Length: 114
Length: 139
Image (cartoon, rainbow over all chains, first blue to last red; front, top):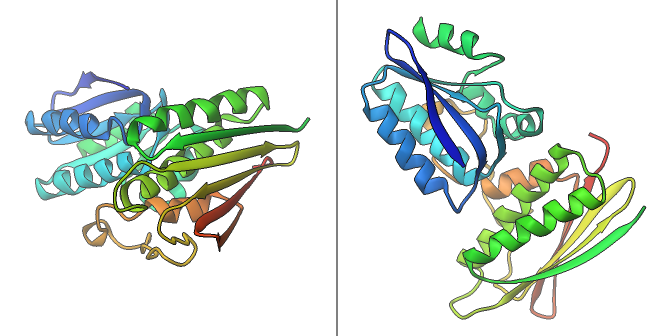
């Protein structure tokens, strides 16, 4: 798993690209890094999942916690470019109803900046 | 083309890597779609973690997997000697349509297993859990 902040907009929305696998073995690290990014004063976060190859329920749990934390401080968490192979997981878990899923970074940023 | 593989892991979390590797190797050999590889990995990880964390009151035990991949479907038999656990009936069903504030964090693992597999059969036999999972190749 590799996480990198790839963009920060003028109004404080951070774009984080996630590559590789997030499973039970690294979900805690995933959570710590994203919490740290969220604490860095962002008012929204976009997770670019284009190069994410695998996500387990341990990772979904982290995303739900993060979404709740963002909501509490008035921010938004959005994801974009979800690979086809992971879409089904988002759909059946109902996560696509909770976390806005966008086709591109631009679209996700526009939604988070509203 | 039909491919059969077996794998036995011990009930400790470090063993999950071997499970993932086996799924990925078989997926490559039998030409599964990336979606199928991801789905099978997720499902087996969830089930194995359940058995590792909750299946026994201590001690090292084994979980065995038999994979049969054909042109139409993948069938996996998972066997362990843990406490009786039927994923079809022994896990609560989360409300996936609940608004975010009401969604509990967690409790999704077994639900995903049920949703992502096309067939699921459980039987308890001679002190062992036998779970048969089927995923169709056509998506």
